[in-house]
Amino acid sequence: MINKAKIKSYHAGPKFKYGFEIPRDYNHAVKLDRQNGNTNWQDAVALEMQQLDEYDTFKSHGIDAVLSPDYKKIRVHLVFDVKHDGRHKARLVADGHLTDIPEYSVYSSVVSLRGLHLLIFLAELNDLQLWSTDIGNAYLEAKTLVHHCRSRIW
View (cartoon, helix red, strand yellow):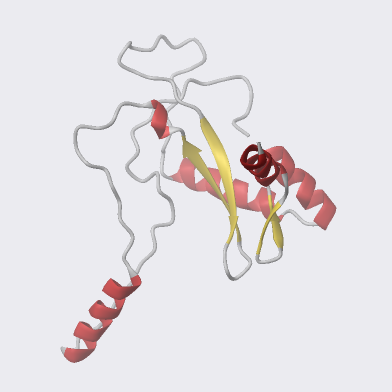
């Protein structure tokens, strides 16, 4: 009973990161923006939606589209975060656990700190120039189908 109470209070209480409260959903984000007198969370959501639109991530087949039986309906939701420099981030994520496991691996790893140190050491040792990049959005290669609905996603 104690563990259940801890888990319930953990999920019910507000979350903070770097001094900013993290929203649980879009409506909470709007409420926090109103309280703080800014639009930081709404701007983060707008940027995420703009990037998804720029990458042509989703294709609408219309509200009356008849979908093939090999398509599976999955939900999407927003995940919010604050970066160490105070930037507010919003990501639209699909509930991929609702789909079958792909035949080929789609795992995308993150470099470890040890691996990065080794890479820098080898580059320095061999007088090589280092370059880095950051992927701006995770949906670059996603194959999804959106059934157009009358209400907005968020």
